[in-house]
Amino acid sequence: MTHTVSAHPYFGIFFLLILTVVSFYGVLILQRFVSRKMARLDTEKLKMSIYECGPRVNKQPNSISIQFFLIALLFILFDVEIIFMFPWAVSFKLLGWFGFVEMILFILLLAIGFAYAWKKGALEWHSIK
Image (cartoon, rainbow, N blue to C red; front, side, top):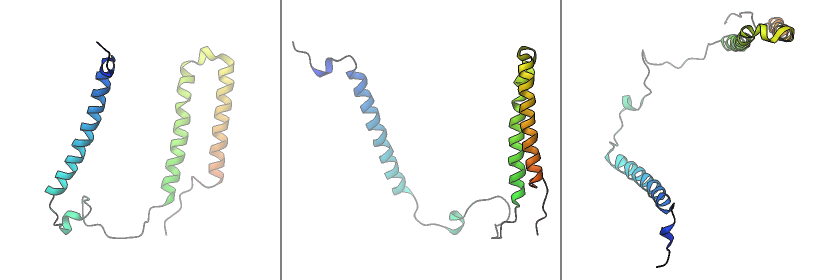
């Protein structure tokens, strides 16, 4: 009796993998074909419009100030920096003077960034006109 290719121990798994991939794509193509044949081709204006709650949307110029995004960016920046202080506070005694000096340098860098943003006028609210 001779050994065939199907005698390999992983042949069944490989065959099932190929069968699964082929059947998946076959069902996918069949599903797309059937859904396109069954779909109604008449389109209504209301059906094709964008759905939003509330009144109909009027086209108007964007009047949102960029200041909102700048304040949000600064908030996220300083909020994430504050998160780094919690592990330091938990292990304050373990870190000793080295940890204290490192945190002072970290806070100094934060203060420099804050002063720079303040000097550039990032925290001043400009009126929309």
